[in-house]
Image (cartoon, rainbow, N blue to C red; front, side, top):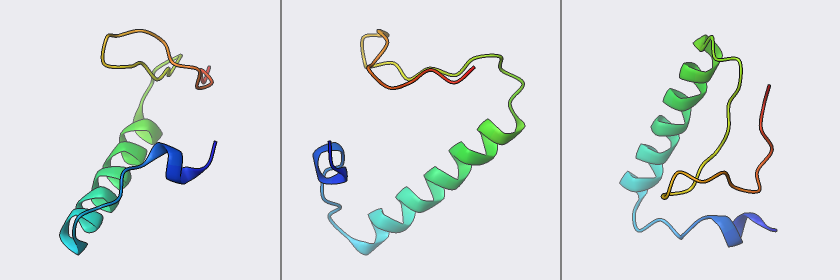
Length: 54
């Protein structure tokens, strides 16, 4: 699966900058997390095919 399959095109430079900031916030939260397990879920709360980090 390529990156283009995962992401919709951004409409503006402002949205691209907001996406970068959001990514940095998520990475900082994960770096400081004490979670024993991190899993990606879909909108319905079900596990995706992405790997679970333990």
